[in-house]
Amino acid sequence: MLNRMVENDEQDERKRYQLWLQSHKLTPEIIETMKAAAASFPYRPLISVVLSVGSATIENWLAVTIDSVRAQLYDHWQLCIASDESAGQSIELMLARYMAEDPRIVARHSPGRTAGAPIDLRDFVKGEFITFLDQFGQLGAAAFYQVVKRLNRNPLDDLLYWDEDKLDSEGRRVEPFFKPDWSPDLLLSMNYLGECFVIRSTLVEKLGGLRRGFAPSQNYDLALRAVEQTDRIAHLPEVLYHRRNESVWLPHLADEVAERDLQSTRAIGEAVRRRGEDGAVDIISPGLYAVRYDIRDEPLVSILIPTRDNCQLLRQCLESVHRNTDYKNYEIIILDNDSAEPETLEYFKEIAAEIQIHRCPGPFNFSAINNLGAAKAGGKFLLFLNNDTRVIRRDWMRAMIEQAQRPEVGAVGAKLLFADGRIQHAGMVLGICGMIGHAFRFKSCNAQHYFGLADIIRDCSAVTAACMMMRHSVFDEVKGLDEKLPIEFNDVDLCLRLRQRRYLVVYTPLALLNHYESATRHRIHVPGDLEVFMKRWGSCLKSGDPYYNRNLTLAREDWTIAL
Image (tube, rainbow, N blue to C red; front, side, top):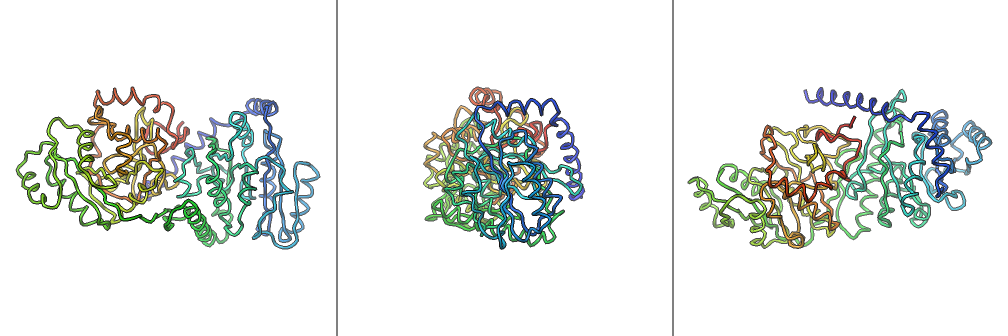
């Protein structure tokens, strides 16, 4: 049943993408306009395309790749082709014909096999910017036009990347990846920049170029090293690169995938160590990774749980924490908002010797209650936890500490599931239905959704305080939760204030819990909270979520294509 539902979703999305392609087609009029604009750009940098050719080269595919460069609407480019003796005579003759036809194409033949050696770019590549291409990829005609258009507005950009899709066995465009803007934690979890991006040549030279010992993940390794040297990283939300589906052309796909994962985890591990952290890199699934940072000094975690009656829910929550938590240095603080049921009061007596219980009388104010709890907490870390949650993964708390201890991280959120196993929370998205949505809400937890984004550590605009961790010092720095938002939006407001201070908000699926919020409950916003929140953050919602692509729908939480 699940497989049939996933298959239907995939078919629907294929149809939606074909409709999207029709509405975004480059018409002859648009092409002429772009060509005229490209010719008149005040800043016209030379872009060098580096293409390696070897024994695996398929002649007609190589021709299509080269032709995609020649078809660029921006004409100030150079195509640098490095071939070796394994390429074969027919390939060499083909390259000679291309060079004779177009002086912008330069081919260099090296004796011996060069596939495992670095390409010496110094006297070969003349461009101010470089992009790396292979015979299985094609550039969209507007690729360099969009790059240089951006550079004319932001000439200091060092690295630019674009959205991409795949080509099936019949050459049809499928599986678009509409990417987020710059997301450092996502790059540690997957090579979301892709194999083909544009980078300033002086930066490549500073980094020592591609390290071919990391093949077939050498471009990923280059990107990881590059983002440590610059924060001038730009995302172009246009589908400008097309790559042949690997299952079509790789005869030994499993071996290729295994080697890529091996070299990718090696590159990520080196990046983590360069950044002064210790830890390991796990493979979640092919192409998806998780950095498991070492926890420093086993710090105390204060778990703050607001509650009012509903003793069975609270009991289940506490028992799951005690039974399913492999991290032992924590304290639990119950924040009781006028419980009156005899069963609840009796339960408080049972646990009082081991758990702090603080009375928080008066009208329910989630922000005020948790601020009081934070004032009573002795932990270096605060963990806000709803009483209607149940821990699933034993390393959930470790997974949150790993991220929350990083100085650049302000808050960490968990993956929460409804009772039936569907996703309740996998990070929040600004602007959904004009407000805030939960990523992949109601989607099955057992299927991979939108390039696995629900299954990997990544940056978000906000996470829910139903299960959220942060350093106590950071909570104090931003003066806690806003008590003017007693019921709703207080967690989103907190996250947005953290981001104003340039902290990251991180989602980790390795912290996995049930959240027994009703899946059928309608969201009726509290008018006072809504008014306060919109006055403060309305313009932020309208400007769009940097971690969500403008080509994706704002009508639902499923990350489907907007039409």
